[in-house]
Amino acid sequence: MSTRPRLTLIAAVSEDGFISRGQGVPWDLPRDRLHFRAATAGKWLLIGRRTYEEMLGWFRDHTPLVLTRDPAFVPPIGKAVSSVPQALDLAAAARVDEIYVCGGSAAYHLALPHADHLLVTHVSTRLGTGVAFPKIETPPWRLVSSIEHPADAENALSMRFAEYQRA
Image (cartoon, rainbow, N blue to C red; front, side):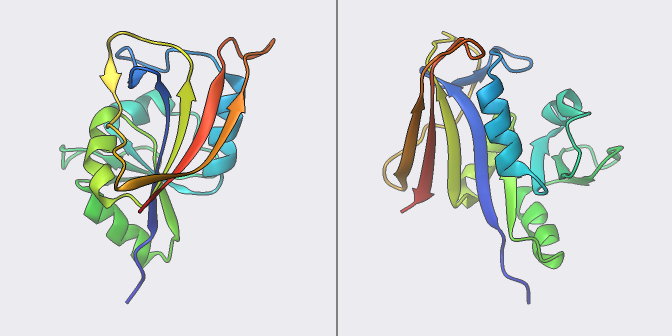
């Protein structure tokens, strides 16, 4: 029997809890993109269908699992899954040690009860409205590291890379 892979949610979130205004990422932060790429390099990614379609072209060394309600959907790259447990089972059968959930909001909300780990870039801006990231409650989540990055010539907004573990 295979061991269940670790499930990590990775997201960039505004001060008021939003990941988007409805389509795409609402900020251009090269430092956060590098952080995302470094964390997810070579990993399996669990992604909602709309986010998957927005990210086509990003999947170099990733194995995307597309969370969809459409049983006829066949992604051009990766595999379709109908639930978070199905994604975990597929990864366990392939002896994958970790899956990263990369959005959108519905995927994050469905995955959070199964998650072990969160990598959140807290972006110093308020969107006011948009697509929400699930609230990070303490407990069960415990902050284990936090690194501040001020705005600079390439990154118009300051940000904080935070890592949370399920307590």
